Image (cartoon, rainbow, N blue to C red; front, top):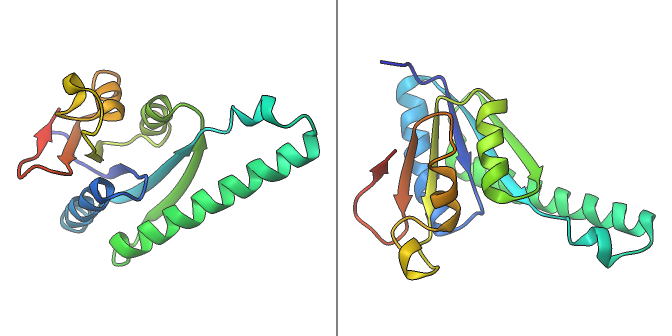
Length: 153
């Protein structure tokens, strides 16, 4: 059995992410694992929306700062007693950035919440989770927002 030393927790600061945060905190405490909290923003629409490069650069920096602040608050709420917690903001496509973050941080496990608020065939695990599951390089523990059971992939 592979030991779990790094847990990746993607967050959009939603109720689903909160459930994942609670589960990850318990596992990290029990296993003495590090936590990487990652939030993803996509600023690519700003490339065309703002012609002024300095304004665009400033706006992107503001978006990243706000995302980092929210992710840091999330980490503070859920991982205050975990000694090794890192907060990351990535920019791009959400599911691709989560998958790449797991590789970059050498994550042993991804614990993420799901929304299930999209089309019928995506209701079970949600669209982002549905895209992460087949691409992830490590196991994934999914915690649906409106379900009493977890799913392991």
